[in-house]
Image (cartoon, rainbow, N blue to C red; front, side, top):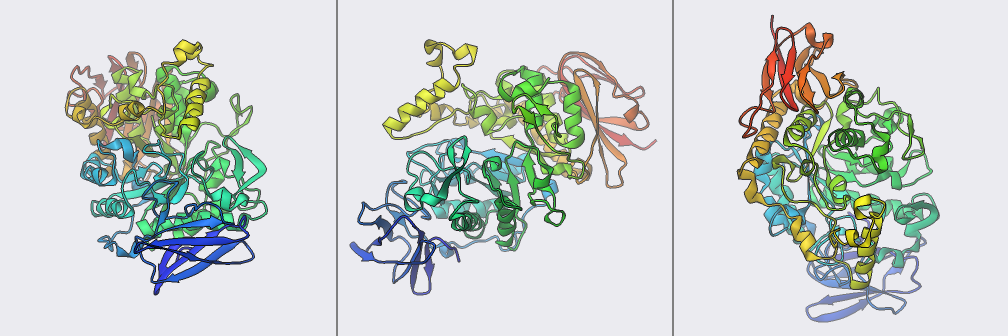
Amino acid sequence: MSLFGAVPCEGGVRFQLWGPAAHDLTLLLRRAGIEERHTPARDSRGVWTTTVRNAHAGDRYAYSIDGSEPRPDPASRFQPDGVHGWSQIVDPTRFRWTDAGWRGIDARDAVLYELHVGTFTEGGTFAEAASRLEYLRDLGITAIELMPIADFPGARNWGYDGVSLFAPSRAYGDPEALRAFVDRAHALGLAVIFDVVYNHLGPEGAYLPSFSPQFLTDKHETPWGKAVNLDDEGCAVVRALLTDNAQHWIREYHADGLRLDATHALIDTNTPPFVAELVARARAAAGRRVLVYAEDCRNLAIMVQDPAEGGWGFDGVWADDFHHIVRRMLAGDAYGYYRDYDGTSTELAQTLARGWLYVGQYSEHERAPRGTDPSRVPMRKAIICVQNHDQIGNRAMGDRLHHGIDAPGYRAAVAVLLLAPMTPLLFMGQEWAASTPFQFFTDFAPTLGEKVIEGRRREFRAFPEFATPAAAERIPDPQAEATFAASRLNWAEQSRAPHSGVLALHTELLRLRAAHGALRGADAPRCNAWAPDEDSVAFIRTDDSGAPAFLVCARLRGVGPVMPGRCASHTRWTPVLTTEDRRFTVDAAPPAIDASGLTITFARPGAVLLAACDE
């Protein structure tokens, strides 16, 4: 049974709230048109508990602290009238699941697809997203990563301003609709990963600190202000609350795992840290495979090492070096954290060889050494992408990688991504080179909204193209509904060229990845990868015996011959596909492949996949 919130039990509902700020606490309950008042009992931690007989799912409730106006339950399971309204009791046992035989996916087969429910479809609901699940299965996706669904203020939000941590947003549907989405995914063989945000609360509607000031601590600072309290007075209940939340998604919604946002901002001086405890508790919450991933910029091998070896036990960590090198190499970005990269094929090859680039070198951006040695880490535990919600939405105009580079270069980068030994992540729409951006959008109350608009424009003043007030006006207004609407995928375009060709490329590469064990996520800690020249990379994928099975050669820039070199010359190779095949582009310019001398002459950027063959 969950520790917090309104939880149906034998004969009624148990209400439990952490509220050390209250001297007196009143539970207000509305049912059958009548409002009742109940007085919970408080324990030494400031946790208030009462059981109300004959309370039912669908009843509304709120809490009053010391006679104040009613406030929603911070652990509410549903907020039908928004994050400022009364909470609703939900009975998770009413849903009839059909996934009893589901056991999750093997981490080696993970292909992640990040989607934002509100902009994934025209209606932006769980039900409409569920109608697209067969498409995702046929594309070759194995795990859907739902961007945060915890309820937020207003009718729209890009996800990271959630305040009702246990409640799926009513903008997307009710809890039953989310369960139906997961159940349908499992029926199709798809895992569902929930993106959860524990490092901060959104700026509007966050009632938790008013009940529990100890939820935050001034002992540590984060980019969002005070840190969530994991190692100060009162932290035991904070840790229990967050662990309870993680287990709730797994137990009550059959989630196949979690993606923890910005774990570098979950500051804990204890050893092992809280996140290691959370991983273990999340796994213990289900009788099936549960994958727990971390978004973290530090390149810490300990995060993904086994707890028996002193590690924290994560199944994977976001390895941003791959994205940053590709973007620097193809689009030329050189500001912010891109300052740490030259965008060379050597950097890319080193990253493909070991999972990430920074293993302790000095970072100009961080002004300190960054990274640790991943030489004992399975390569599949590095999560890589060529775009994701952050790398698009945090750009002033929300433009995607393929909006600013040539199509051949994009196809080559996609081939490297989907054939690499790491775990690939796709951001919704990239598989058909969607024309739509993914912009930053909110729907805060007017006063806060004005501050967000100004903050967004101030954020980009250091960029020459937005330095003047007039230029800053071009940055989309995050509060405008039009900004949200512009970010909604246009599904009609995927069947038209050139989008259809890009979709065909993604589909074929993922089909090959699924069909050949040598192309799945690698348990090996190293990959044989190198840079034949300053514009190209090559790497070999091996079979279970360690013998070469596939060779990938990609020219990401320029034209001319690429000679993969002696590392691959001892094996005979036969072409499987090129990104310039006519099924992938209307103006194909296939490279000339001399298999005998292993020379590939590119007429423009592209990638070639070759299979080892018997002599």
